[in-house]
Image (cartoon, rainbow over the protein chains, first blue to last red):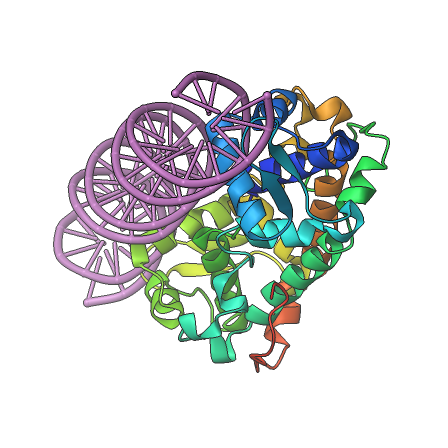
Length: 145
Length: 145
DNA sequence: TTATTTCCATATTAAATGAGTATAGATAAT
DNA sequence: ATTATCTATACTCATTTAATATGGAAATAA
């Protein structure tokens, strides 16, 4: 039940672009070294972000990438939906027709509610929120233990 | 970012056992046909549930399986933790040492919070809650769209 | 006591997915 | 023109998931 590296990398790329927002176009090599992401993989992820309208870029020497809009309008929920193949905890949540038992399934609505509460949270956290946090993580107890 | 079939099947197995709680030991073949789960796969999942102390069973003719305790004490969070290999949205949430950047990562605490809110929800839904719902699912809008 | 019904355990396989690499091309500044 | 940069697609490799196969162990009842 984990997020893909594309989602994680995608988020870190956006953070990097937000941090360097006043530096003009940021090059792939710059992001790659700062965030320790393989260049070619990074390029793929950037392309997805660009096609989604979140990032814009200019080609040629001195070219690079930058956020298309203000980071306070980019939310984690949007990034997760963009990169995760299946965005629900269980497929039947958004495609009940995939399961012949879904009509009177006793669990489906629970998976639905859990998915909803998760995205409610993710849709409340923007890239701007992240770069304005102090980045000091307490390494304390984990919610799943 | 989806739950495994083991988690989904495991939940449905427990629902089935809860529904038939007054019928004595329930046989694998019974659960398999009712819930449309391959017999041998079902046996694996049942074994995990048994080792976790959630299910008990008796061998030999007239044997079968039953809940070890009342279904109002079995929560979805427990089932998910039991079957999912990685129970956090991102590995660094519970194992920050796995990522050299985690100490001053600007995203980690967000993944932590999202994981926490998800399990808070899952830990509030019991098997008893599920079997006492009416099972009529509205097939309405999905939280991820 | 022995046949039979049931659960128990491990090994194997097959398909899907995820993560990353390779190769080739297009654009624009100098 | 040359070169630095982004763009696009195809391919490979490793891991995980889902399921199957095979063989066993326990307990009941004829």
